[in-house]
Length: 132
Image 1: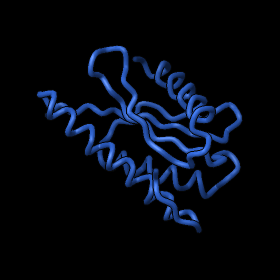
Image 2: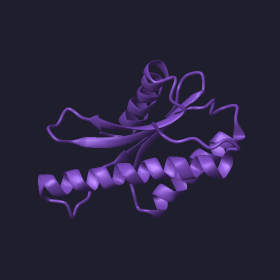
Image 3: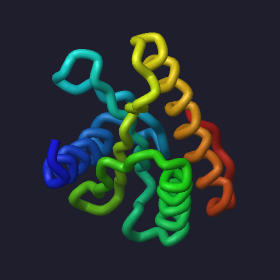
């Protein structure tokens, strides 16, 4: 996909999670693409991103840490009302050639992403919570 396509895809993803997972403050998803066995990982939040500076700060911390880990951000977008945010990252790793290696890398990356969401929340929120 081209960068403009990722922007549209992630904006649609933000709208999707706002409508289907509105009760979840922050979470992660595996998104399987049309190509067999192609997968991206996504993080999202239903936290009134546009109106809450602490939320924006926590999300930026997550994005910075992902960059520091050399994980490719494919796109970031908000829902039309600015309340929900979504972030897509690549689950690919050039060193993983077998399906088992790719699956293991994907699961470890998903665990890292979930941990980053918790760390980002703890750094900016007064109330602690755990991911479902």
